[in-house]
Image (cartoon, helix red, strand yellow):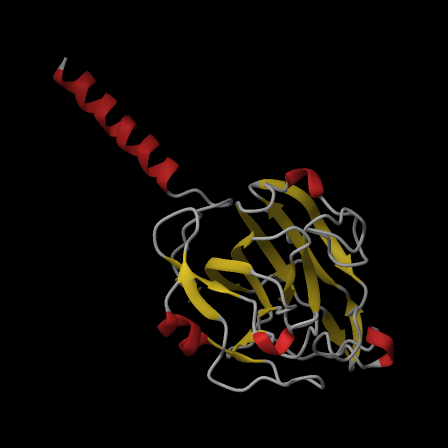
Length: 255
């Protein structure tokens, strides 16, 4: 009987630990070896992020994204509504990690406070995964912008937290020429919405990110880039942003 009780206790602990270490979705914890890019504090914002100084850059350090109370849960978050981006001037006050990355696993949580709220997550400061309430087109929420259909069905809605979980493999090059496209897999709110999508180009022009001005976005270069969060003049909040660097030898991001 004691042995049975001990076995049941061990199983219960294992189940509890599994529930508390979910790999994707809202509240997913950073795995061993991951970097916490934003934990809700001003200190982590200033330590890990800076403004992206692209062609339209018009903000000034320190970062003007405000740390605010989480509207749904305990703690604090950051509001992307930088005054320099008023009117939708993307590229004027976007923030990017100080560190650049190639292959990685990335987790981002966001909350759109108002209808039509607009922002975006950029992988390698190149490839935008759209955040845009009300848009379910190929330019819309959750889409690899202009490359996939929007998985709008997975969206929790305005005023609620949402999450993206990516595995990303950077483009590969031979003799200075792109030989393999960048690949990405995404879980949107814990639902796998696309896998191993090959990304053709940078969209949005030079104000969008690295290589946006090269051959109309088709001139991808062999240059690592940071994780960028976009300011477009809307109150879109972020929290729990973490990344783990990978070395994906095989052309496969499925997880």
